[in-house]
Every structure is written in C-alpha cells, then in structure tokens.
Length: 346
Ligand code: TYM
View 1 (cartoon, rainbow, N blue to C red):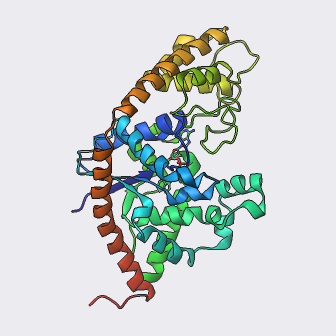
View 2: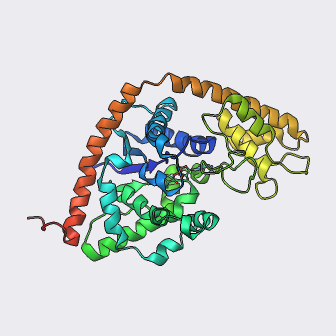
C-alpha cells in the first residue's frame, strides 16, 4: 500500500505575514513532522500562483528562495525523505494539466468563486487577469497531480478545495479512475484538528484577514518587519470603545484578534490567554504585552533566518523537484492518454 499524500502550499508573491506564519506555516510544519511516518508530505511554493495579483517580477525569484529559507528557519526538517519541498514552476506538468482541466471547467463555475469575486471587484474588469479567474484550476492541478488525499488550508480556500473534488469526480466519471479525489472538507478537519479554520485578522481592519496582498501594509505584520515597526503596528491596532477585554470576535474583533495573536506567540491555548486578560479595562497595557511578545518573536526568528544555509536548501529543493516530476508526469500521462493526446497504454 502506498502512503496517503498530504499536500499544501503558501504563495511567494511578497514577504510572509505573521498570519501566514502562525495560521498556516507553523501548523504545516508541525503536521509534516508528526505525520511523515504514515504519509508522504508535499509542501510547495506556488510560484505560478504569484502572478494572479500584481507583483514585482524583478524580486520574485529571490522571494521564492526567501520563502524556502523561511520554511527552514521555522523548523522544517530538510533531512526527512518523506517530506518534500518544491517550487511549482519547476514541475511543468502543473501548467499542462491546468490547460486540460480548464477545458472541462465551466465559466460560471469559476465566476462564482468568492475569492475571485472579492479580488476582481476591487480592481475592475480590465485589470483582472484571466489568471486570477483561472486560479482554482491551477490549484486543482497542484493537488490532483500528486494523488493527494489531505490538503490542509485556511477556510478562505475551502471553496477551491471543493472545486478540486468536483473536477476530479467529473473527470473520473467521464474517463475512468484518473484521479484520487481529496477528502471532503469535514473529513480534512477531522484529520487535521480544529485549528484548521484559524485566521489572523488585519490589525487596522479586524473584519478582514491579515493578507500579504494588502496594499497599505498598516495592519499587516510581515516576517521581515523590523521589531520596532511591528511594535508600532500593534500599539496602533484598531480596538473598540467597550473598555473591557473579552474574546468575542463578533463584537470585539480587534481585541479578539490580539488575544489570538498573543496565544499563538506564546504557544498557549487560547482559553489560557483569554483567561489571563478577561474583564481587564486597560487596552494600552494589554497591547504592550502583545507588542513585547511580537518584538521578541521577530528578533529570534530573524536570527534563525540569517543562520539558514542556502546550499542545503537548494539541494533539498532539487531532490524534491526530481521526485515530484516523476509522480506528476505519471499522472499527466494517464490524463493525456485518457483525453486522446497520447496512444492508449498497451
Ligand atoms: P496563500 O499564500 O494565500 O495562503 C497560504 C495559506 O495560508 C492561509 N492563510 C492564513 N491563515 C491564517 N491567517 C491568515 N491571516 C491567513 N492568510 C492566509 C491560507 O488559508 C492558506 O492555507 N491558494 C493557496 C495556495 C495554493 C495551494 C495549492 C494550497 C496554491 N495551490 C494547492 C493548497 C493546495 C493560497 O491561498 O495561498
């Protein structure tokens, strides 16, 4: 029996935020470490996906390598052979399978994706690329090429995961068993535990998620911010006028977000952190506690980042990419045969 595959990725269009780090990267690394005996773990940098929002192309390549360094600094064990880390564009089957899946995907189906609707409405039709529209199909190819069963992502990505299941089932119904259909979202939650839907919010506007594609960056803490810059952002975070600390995301989104961030920074259960500050009235003192913790975290993290070794990282990327090309090309050939682009197997 082959081991089930777990697969997930973080885009590399700019520096990562503490939202990506605590909400996605650290849980990913913990999961990779704890599951690598029973599963194959594929972590990848979706560099082609970076083009879907405006980026500085002169910095992209360095950004990709930087993100691989961040994985290493955050504790990803590069010497574990069951854990692969690779760059999407180094495995050309991603682009090829995307085109094929495109031709079996409905225009309306893509137009209904909430992330597309949100992102395109803020820039207008002429500045919305077909790539942004097509984003979920490339994501489906990322997953289906490796027969992945488990795909840990934040809840902003669950619609894309559901689309991946739909297109896999559609292709299987039409052409026979081509793809492993990833597990349903509830089953994913069962497998990965309850923190899956965790989302850190923007500090300036705590009703939206902290996102690296946010233009102003005022409410976003990047891993590359100086500790001083990050402290300022925490101290000026939007709160409320209730003058009483409660974990209540609906009515006190700013305070709740800071409690969440503090719990993550301290590695504590949320209840423990919340219990410590519950009912207190001095928001300034509370913010100072969070700011000190952020300052300590960034100082330590940036020291670990400086200590990473590019030679080791590039070697790991190369080995993983070779192994991944084999798996991906096998799936692609199966699809090419099924749709009539290659002769049928003997
Ligand atoms: P990206 O880079 O936008 O987000 C990567 C992961 O981080 C989660 N996330 C957050 N979690 C908590 N708090 C936040 N503020 C926060 N912001 C982002 C996202 O939910 C995501 O899990 N489309 C994917 C990349 C991708 C992918 C794939 C993932 C491309 N192909 C195939 C899995 C499988 C994305 O949104 O990346």
